[in-house]
Every structure is written in C-alpha cells, then in structure tokens.
Image (cartoon, rainbow, N blue to C red; front, side, top):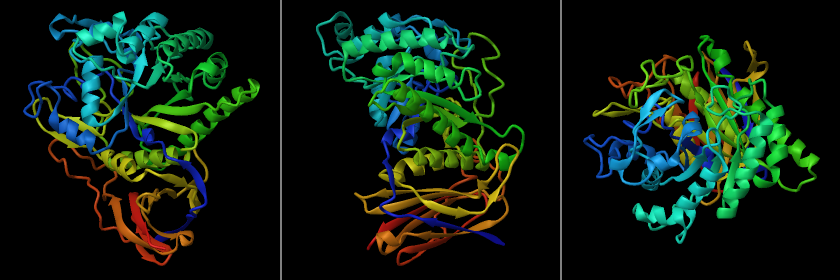
Length: 502
C-alpha cells in the first residue's frame, strides 16, 4: 500500500533568498559543549590550542555559517573580562545558571580562534542580566575597535592585533524567564536593551542587533512581551529572537511529527506582532526574525547539575532517534518556508548538549541521527526558496488537525543550476508516491535521491553502534522531462537533487 502526493514547483514562485545563517548553531558554556566538546587539550586529536580535531572536522562538514556564543542562560551571569588575558591568571567562577564551576579557559578570543577554524561567524551575546550598558559597550570595543583605546589596546596586549569584527550581537537571553539571572519585565528589558543597543552602535555602527523575544510561545508573557519590547527598541534593533523546543515525552509519534506546524504558527504569530508595531510606528523598517534556539529536547526535566560546582559535567546529553531526526527535518523545512522572514536560526546546541554531535572524553566521536537532515539542508538548501503547491492526504493528531503526510519544500540554486526537494513522509506505515511537476524548468535529471529511514522509529546512533541509522542514496526518484516521480518510504527524510537541463 502507498499514499499519493503531488508537488508543483515553478521557477517563478519565488519566496525568498535563503540567508545562509538559517543553518546556524549554538554553543553555550553548558555541560560538555565547550570543555570536552570543542575543547579538550589532552585529546589525541587536539591541536596546540586544545581544540579537538575530530569535532572540528565534523562541524566543518556541516558548513555552519554562524554560531551563537556564549549563551544562553550562562550569559546572564557572565563577566566577559574573566575569559580574556593569560590563561594562568584567569579565575574560576561559580556559574549560577547551571550550578557548576567555570574555569574560564575558553573565552572570547579562544572562541573567535575556533570559529575561524570552523569557518563560522560568531553571534555574540551580551549580559543584560547582572550587567548592562557599560559591560556591553566595552566588549564591543574590545572585540571590534582597531586600536587606540583602552579595551582595544587590551585585546592587542592579549595577542590579537586585528579586531574580531563580530557583526551580529544578541541583547541578552530569555529575559522574561524566571529561571534567568536578572529576569526583567518587558518594560525593564526593553528600556535597557534600547539604551545598550545605542551605546554598542555608537562604538561600532556596523552592528546588527537581536532583541530578546519571549522565551517561548507557552509563556504567559508571550506576544505582549514582543509588542512591548519592540515598541521600546524598534529603531535600534534589527531582529527579534524566538526560542522553541519539541519532544515526544508522551510517546505519541503522530503528534510529535506534526510539531513543525507549531513552529509555523509561532513564526507567523511573532511576524504579525512585528508588523503591528511597524504599523503603529508608521515605520518603513521591517524587523526580521532570529530563531536562535530550536531543537528536539527530551531531557528538560533535569535543569542543573545534580552535584553542584563540578567542572563541565555531562548535561542534557539526549540520544536522538529516527523520529527525532524526522522532526528536525520538518523544522528545517518550516524554516525554509519562512525564509522571507526568518533570516537566522540556531539549532541548539552543536555538540554534546542536545546536539547532533557527541564525544567521549579522551575517546571517539559519533554522529546522531539529527546530524544528517541538518547537514543536508545546510549543504543543499542554499539559493532561492520556491513556494511549492502541495497536494497531500492529511491526518489529525492530539494537538493538530489537517496534518499533511507530505512535508516538503524546494530550493533552486541558480549558480549550480540545481533544484533540491526536501521531503518528509509522516505516514508511519505506508510509503508515499510523490509526483513533482517542474515543467517551468524544462527537462531535469536526478542527481541523487538520499533517504534517511529505519524499520525502528526508536533506532539511534550510539558510542557502541555509531552507524545504526545512516542515510543512503538508493532512493527511487526518476525524471521524465520536467516531471519527477519518487517513492518516499514510510517515516522517512528525503533529499531529491535535480539538475536543470531545459
């Protein structure tokens, strides 16, 4: 048995150019993301600066364009000055967001060095929890000013003659969350963020700034927070942040696979609030969205290290299954479908903490199931999103109605003359016959049809079995002129790459 679906892809149905930063990620001083993740001086693959070579290679393969740092909840209690200068002189701190000891052996300069090796830009975050305008403007001066001032000359004395030139900065993190150090009301945060933005831009006018949206759509502050913050910051910020996580802790796979519909609604709602404030202010400026934390997160119940004041204890090291990878794939498709408004997004996080990449201290590295849709989208999802017309049968779940079995989007890379179709078959037991109409392109040929599937939805990759769930290139996609047909296996992620010959 199989179900039928259709997709029309027209080269004139252009939604938006993909900002490569849509495929960003996030590294926080949390768990083993930094220490034991990207940085492990004693590891056999470590370079002279202590960066793990195997981790670096796995990250480079993802082509991550931008990485948010250093948090996250961590940033709201972080004194950035503790992480610069000679390592032997750096103090250890009690880190209150996660109740651990922070050694400060990795700080701003080390992360800048590592990001260059990874081929990524840095999305810096400033502390608007325990600190504010002064610390933020000084950090911009330290990082971006060439020379001739106290903070820029201090950077030079630390061995960094050239400024880092960080362009994108987050004005705090989840400031409406009661778990946040220095949590604030919308008015308190909006006024502080606006004044901080002004001072930071006076140091470096080239900055683009991200204001904190509410910590999630389930917060009692949601929507009103966004409206108030934007009302107070509109002229001095460029982006508003969104954070969302999903899980299947109820064991309802059909409902879990529909969670990207929540992401769709979340994005649309925040965009509507932005446009309301634009209209209210009679402004010509459009605020774009930065979905700078998103992922599947199963272990949210355990929030802090069980034994206080450890150094980089394992935390939130979720093991991801095939069904988790399918949800990540659906969320990536959702981001592409909103590429006209969402210009940056960060899968949280990149390594060891709810991450696509896992390491063992002193040992090997392995790739989780979620690594593969993220990699495929980052590599092949560059170009112009073409808004597809989709016909698909649907189902209802506990929280959603009219969930299409086919979740799909298409991206046209004019430079490479390729069209890529990303598609998830949500049906748990039946394959899907997909017909794609690309007549506007003329004739096309199939380059590759990649499939991520497994007979067990709970199958995962682990330290002992790192190759249990791997993509294969045995997909059945075939082209006939400007039409493509493919069988999408039940519960599968598919990447169909097409060369345009017409």
